[in-house]
Length: 114
Length: 113
Image 1: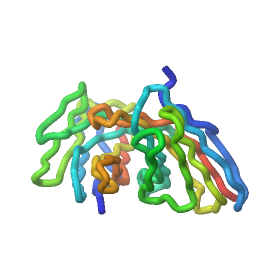
Image 2: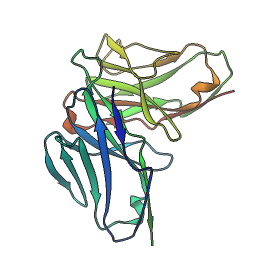
Image 3: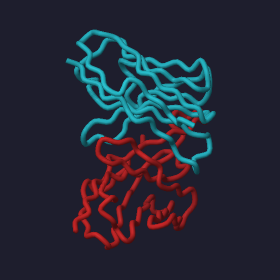
């Protein structure tokens, strides 16, 4: 089966940097993704790591270490609008039939304070 | 380009009633999925499809049916609603290549009384 662990809540100050960690256990692994969800909204795709290393997209970066089954999302220059829930998700071979699906963590609620 | 369109946005059902949640995408995505989201539980996969005519069960399929007769549409049917199915339901679609991520619909908030 698949399982993902991420902190349930994180609080950070506006303008600061915050890191949200994700560890996973899965029978097959084809990449780690991150999604952002504001209260009452739909999840939106932020980033994808298929290989080890750092991917940067503006103020957001995501890192993957496949040997450690670990990744993180790094948010820089935090803004109030970054207050949201952040989900890591692994792409794995869900049914063993070559069809890949996303399994999500339970999410990290980020609160940005002035 | 509408993306992923879900209807209805809100629904209240009585226990035992059936209904269909609609999902349509106009991006020619091969993959479509249904997730439910409950407080503290994250997003859990109900059913998914990797192309027209192909569907399979996810983590929590009981009480739900799906079909995929066209690339665009992927309806979710609740057979006999139960209070445990009170949740927010999201439809999502993607290309088979993971790099582009999933596009989610705006969700259906379902209450079963």
